[in-house]
Amino acid sequence: MKTHSSTIPVRIQQLGLNLYAYNHNIQQVEDGYVYESLHFDHIPSSNEVINHLVSRAYPDGEELAIQRKGIIDPQNNEFVSYYQNVERIKAIIKSEYGE
Image 1 (cartoon, helix red, strand yellow):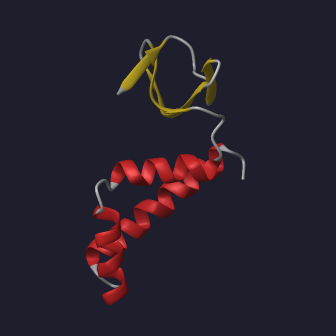
Image 2 (cartoon, one colour; image 1 turned 120 degrees about the horizontal axis):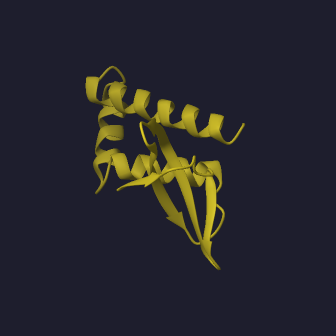
């Protein structure tokens, strides 16, 4: 779900005693910013954010099924697309974390 803000959101925002939001996909729009948040009960590491985003993109065992296709045929179009998407997600998050 997208959130709207008149100011640029902080990347990691403490929402409560044990609730943190990782704000990502931040886009400037005419009247502020829109972004998506992932919620954690602790300050998330970059790997936790990556895993969460990949799991969201490939739910309910879909990721494992694609990986199995890649084991059989590393040139499988679905596997190649999956691999490129995961690498893109990793690059974005690592960059946002300054790693």
